Length: 212
Image (cartoon, rainbow, N blue to C red; front, side):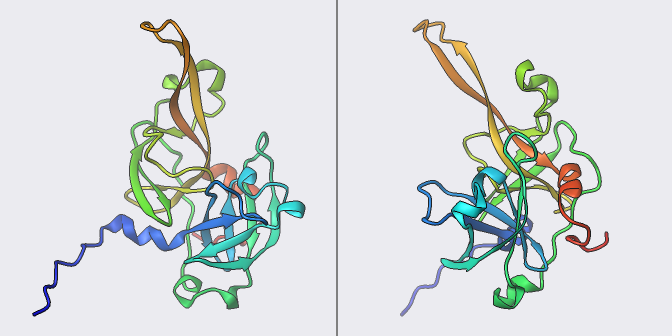
């Protein structure tokens, strides 16, 4: 007799998992890089994940299969930390070709519940209030809490209710403090900044997203 356990119930957040991919440099880097499928063969990642693309020749990786990319537009870490890559759509799995992502219209607001997505997991978090960000990093005003648990650079940040794309994860925001016990200066992670949808809309060429 074969024992069959209960199936794992899929949550609404899991519907975002197929949009998450890995981004590999050539040769493959030692750290994980992520990206999000937008539709029409387009993938968005953080510029520093893809690196200087003429040298790194980034590839999109889906279920351990690597796809060569064409660079549509390359940003820079200290400017707009985004790079848009394209894969021949006919090469992609049919389950992905049919999908389209949309950008959120409303700006992120403090306390808003969000979902970060990488191929391995979806994790809920919240938008942090700008006043909780250290003064020296206030220009990175769109950020989330739960630094250790959420997706890293290039992963997507989605509105938990609308399932639209709020942004692309860019960097950690940290602060140095003196430990009152050891009297040593230590670095504490405060939040994670993401490039917001408003900047994504300006960065990507017209027609990248379907009309909303």
